[in-house]
Length: 222
Length: 222
Image (cartoon, rainbow over all chains, first blue to last red; front, side, top):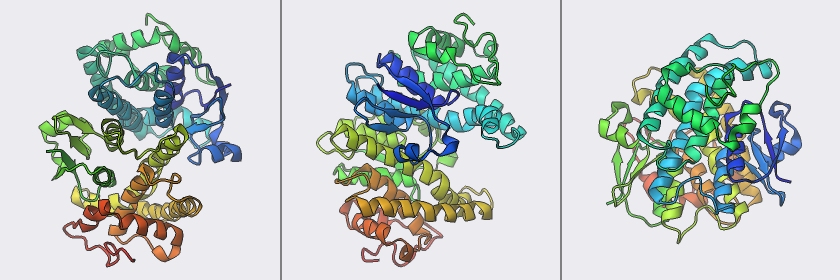
């Protein structure tokens, strides 16, 4: 059986879960407490991050971007990057935007400070980081809304990796009740369409000890 | 003509310069002062980072990882990722390691603090960041040496993107005289092999106002 080592509120793990489900590739989820630095895990992934996918043939694949590129090549019947070179550039640009810029400026400052710090026993959330996170969130949600408003899906006509990368981050923030959806109607319409996909059910069913998500978190008509 | 917008001591720009040269794809270099936030540039790359490659047909491709994936698909006669799925996983894992972990822990703390801050008029280098950078450098150079010692090239039998990503960061640090090569003989042997490649000549010819690289910087027998 294919195994995905993950953590529940990790946006990179969530992205891969949705991508595997979109591709209809069955997998088993295993929580990896990366802070315990398990030697067998470090051998698979010296970076000590989640996710790592272990394929049916035993091949370990670390790093969510590497996993998504691998799946695109190993299972070419479905493409989540697009078919033309230009589509693939735009999809990869946006996936890198959400996993890089959005993560550093928003997800890390909010989910990282409020949830991961407690989990890792690294003290109280830093108020400045949280303020920075909320300021950046507004700017990023406006860009997301602009894309959703001018295109069918974020990178163009077809749903793909840009949508799943963005939705993975948004879902982590929404779990913590950080998004005031009234303010971002275009982004909300896009996210409602993503939430209604069967591939997203696992994400919406996540529960994390000590955090109660807002009532709308798993509601498809939020 | 193909155009690469870059900055001289940017490791991501250097990686793409070497990759284009390895592929024998001619290009013109243009310095992009990203801090000026030129509207035409932001339209091509809202992230306001270098590099951006503009292809002969006018297609703008931002983000060095996106550019390298694009080149792999657009010019499939040469592969810098490897041929088997497992080789491509290992090459991409290491490229992501150097562009992610190595950059955040080493290049940003040393090249960023000592050179970029001055360039951007953002004050004096932060002593703590520089100390952290040097501590991380030792650890990373040992890992690089371990890879170079146990494999022909960093990701395996063939030279490829992992080597060029690593060498791009190493070359920026070496320009600033930050690497005490006596301490890292395995990494030095690997870097000497990279430096002797024709694709690396442009990097070794770089000069930056106000910084004098050490005598060994462009020396192939350093």
